[in-house]
Image (cartoon, rainbow, N blue to C red):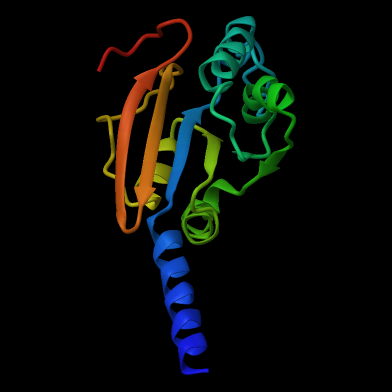
Length: 174
């Protein structure tokens, strides 16, 4: 019986160690280019450039076998993720951008070993990255920056961010 209890405890603690070592990978992007012809429209669709960028995102991340895609409730963020979601056969989950710290905490606690995409806005993307414990990767994300993609890797209590670009190059060259 003592041996059984000892083995059980070793397996239990070993499992917790394995879970603690699993890596969470989170890609964070800003929504693609939106229509700007009606300044009163607070929830515009994507422009033709934005639709092309959403397709480029699908190609960029299509081989990653993502577990989840999170988007704000705006059309432009959802439309940015739909081509990829359709390709891999998952639904887009909505999150509140005012609660991005809670989202990051939930994912760090419950999504170890998963691959996640989060689609946000120019004024929230870097805050999402910081909510995961990584440093702000670029000086600023402007209204003209659409081609950045940030990969945040979280393992244990360490978070690292890598910066890349996808689709047609856009204005900022930082």
